[in-house]
Amino acid sequence: MKLPSKELNKILVRRYWADRVFRLCAVTMLLITLGTLAALLIDVFIDGAGRLSWPFLTSFPSRKPEQAGILSALVGTVYLMILTVVIAFPVGVGAAVYLEEYARRGWLSRLIELNIANLAGVPSIIYGLLGLELFVRAMRLEESLLAGALTMSLLVLPLVIIASREALRAVPPSIREASFALGASLWQTIWNQVLPLAFPGILTGAILAASRAIGEAAPLITIGALTYIAFLPDSLVAPFTVMPIQIFNWVSRPQKGFFEAAAAAIIVLLAVLLLMNAVAVYLRQKYQKRMNL
Amino acid sequence: MMPKRSQRGRIGEGLIQVLLLFCGILSVFTTLGIVAVLLFETIEFFREVSLVEFLTDTQWTPLFADKRFGILPLLSGTFLTTVIAVLVAMPVGLLSAIYLSEYASEKVRPVIKPLLEILAGIPTVVYGYFALLFVTPLLQKLIPSMAGFNALSPGIVMGIMIIPMISSLSEDAMYAVPQSLREAAYAMGSSKLQAAWRVVVPAAASGIAASFLLAVSRAIGETMIVAIAAGQQPRLTLNPFVPIETMTTYIVQVSLGDTPHGTIEYKTIFAVGTMLFVITLGLNLVSRWLRERFREQYG
Image 1 (cartoon, rainbow over the protein chains, first blue to last red):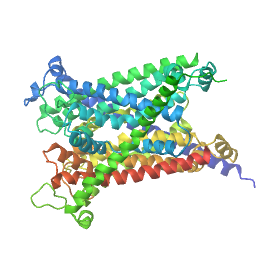
Image 2: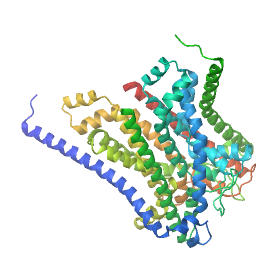
Image 3: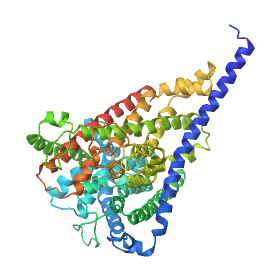
Image 4: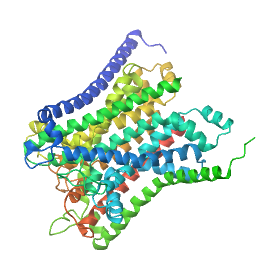
């Protein structure tokens, strides 16, 4: 069948425009989305920059908005993050090593895998309910730093496992074969050859998991973490608060002064997250270079 | 030939393996723990409240003197914010994915993808702040009758938060569609848009649907945005301009108060948590099934 060239031309022009319009729509939507991100950052910065000061970082919360600071929340966040990593990192890496290096393809490894994938999708507040019953009540840890860190560890464990498995998988099999050929046992191979090579990748995953933990408030509120703390936690079983909870508390109050404090705290929180992600990116790049050698 | 290992070495190796296996099984115990805790307290809850009342009563007032235990208002609140979020995130996420997978040059993609990922990395309290103090006042200029707490503003902001989930998972699915299918479409005279829309998207449909379901599940479980900006008034309504309460917000509300262990108020958060867990688990499982089906097709 032969189309008259005028008809054909019309169809071609229409198709050309449809393509352009679609591309324009998609780019516009992307720009609006990224514009919203920019609006969020600018809005927070305008609201909070005036409140940022050294006293803000070194004062305890207060009933007077202009005197309120984030010292207890900042210290609480740092403690909680360190504890969470200390608990979740070895267990997560251990599970990943088991699944990648030891497990045979059987029902057990399939069950564990399916389970980890599902755990990654459980809402964070559900972990809070688990922590409330298991750590706060059954283990009688009360609303302590340790109870919070254990809850957070369960929350980030799937992330650590998934990231560690990817890092282990990226280590070429030839490394393992060479090690076996020299007479090393399975564990000697893993400990001396595989883990050092996978370590930067595992560390990147751990940092990303920790940054997830830093931003979470819901599970900690659920286990009963306090919103007003005017002292620093001095032991594992001391009560604590974290930055997201402090921000939530300030946003929930009617006075405008507390909104400014919340915005300033958000700037600090985002700065901490940015720093951690920068470290993760740096490690990843260094890692890629090493693997290419 | 394997060299003979010492007895101690062999025991050590075995011990390590058992230890590592335990690390892996710990995740199974986590799931069992969640199920056990939720079930235990929920059964306790249903000793005092009938299942029929829980599922059909239209009032949720466990914290008042006149207690009613109908979860419908909390479900409608969650449903409303989730639908708004999905209405925002689905078109934007899908179009972004098509653009990134089919149109964007190799120079643009590595710039835009990480930028979108930032959206997923921002703590949800920050989104809550943004919804309450930026988006709501902005919307109130357009709709003066809108309340300070409402479903619309946190719904929109939640939608923005889940865009990267949809766009990156959908893009992965489209990227995995074999190049030969595109080439066949071009050979038949398709334009880029036709190839993308009529060949690549249908081929990646199960992967795209999986990303939608995962995003919906994420929106249902999201807590801080709605706790800050949607209000704490359980109300059976689909009006997006009035204060409502979601299931997650209710759990936060009770946790903030001083609710003694063993009271009916305490048990309600587990009953609500069970509902939340069942819904999100169902969505996650279907999503996973769809993704596996997709992988079988083009693996």
